[in-house]
Each structure stands twice: as C-alpha cells, then as structure tokens.
Image (tube, rainbow, N blue to C red; front, top):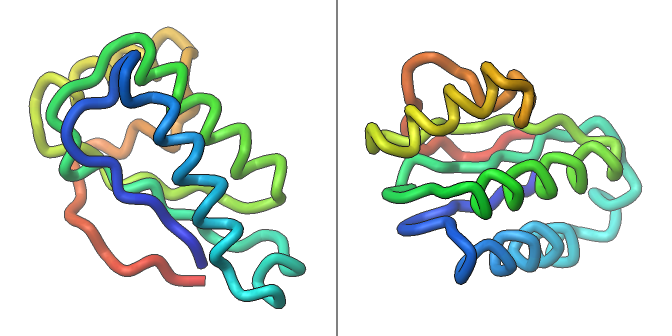
Amino acid sequence: AQGVVVSGELDLASAPRLEAAVCAAYQAAHPLDRLLSGCRFLLDLSELTFLDSDGISALHAAHLEVEQRGDQLHVAGPTASGPQRLLALAVANGWLGREFARGEPTRRTAPTG
C-alpha cells in the first residue's frame, strides 16, 4: 500500500508538490504492488494547517489519480479546524468525494493493503 502525508499549507505554491508526491509514491512501490489494483492509498492530512481552493483542486486531482490506478483512497482527516471546515464545505458542495468527510479527524496510521 502507498500513501502520502500532507503537512503545513496546501495552496497555490504547494499544490504541485502533492501531485508529484502521489506519483512518487506509486513509482516507489514494489513492482508487484503496481500490478495489483484495488489497494488502499492513504492520504494523511492530519498535519495540514492551511487549505485553500488550489489545495482543494490538488486533493481532487490526487483522488482522481488514485482512482485511475484502480486503488481506493483513504483519508486521515486534518486536526486543524480551518482545513476541517473547508473540507466539509467542499464535500457538501460536491467538490470532493465523501472520502474526505470522515467526521472526526483521524491520526496517522500505517497504510495497509
């Protein structure tokens, strides 16, 4: 299983790094893992402190990338209240999938396959 930890700010300046990190996580995976589909991909937002509309777009793109690879996205929610509120708004308006609405934020756990 693969995963990415997003920490600090996710905005216009940092959004491209999320896409690169998701691609790098897949590149770093064992070749056999790349042949398997239906694995879990953990997007850990527990260390996210700031999120804006560019960050929402980056999260959406990351979700699409995971789905295109046939994997299932799991999200560890942010602990900071600002990102929590923006994610809730994005989910409520259909900008992000329900994977981003996990109620209580979760702490980082090791990705499992």
